[in-house]
Length: 300
Image (cartoon, rainbow, N blue to C red; front, top):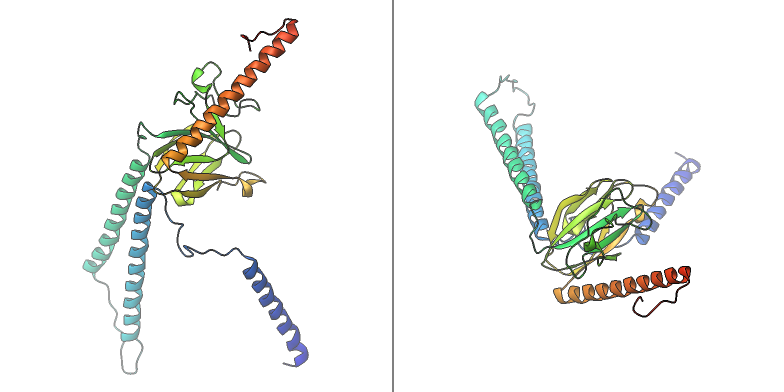
């Protein structure tokens, strides 16, 4: 090959190497859990990890064992001068054994994982923090119970611009509920979430919690609950392709101490009460102005 033909190929490889180097330098550096899942932050997540780790190490051990046996027989019974091939019909006993063992392992995994799934989706504790989470293109709205500790009822057919949570109008329990654009939860306390979607299918996905649950339009998903094990900042993301803005459908999650949560909740309840009072006063003033009467301090 002449230099004239070699130079374009060398130039092409140099361009590829340069491009890879540029992308590698500009990529975000991950400093932890490079080859594994993010550090788990929930009680249920630890049990999920235990099952996944068992399957991984079991699979790795079986892989190594089968490859060792394969290489051993490949070498021992390789073709050699003077060695005649021998036909073997097989061994029924061995075939039964190596069929029964994987079957037993798979049945055990199915039974255990099904039991684990049932426990993780069991009835939430009575003292769980309740949060209504509504997904939409392309964001998340969170609703917490107010001073009465009860979430207002929801009608999945009542979503609108003015009623983004689909609250039932004649249910007084929803009057003091307050909204948030971030999910704030106390560490070590069970959290029961109600998932809704206002438009298309979305998904509640938090890798550190080992949680993934689809939010389906027209349905209330009420079987998801979890309990965190450490404080920190996490991210809620939609992992269901839901449109052009799917890539940016995220919301912050803050796991804080009980004292911090109580302070945050009290501030939200107070702010909501003041906003409701101001809205009511404005409505009275508007009605009085429309009717030509002078609003009184008692009405305001």
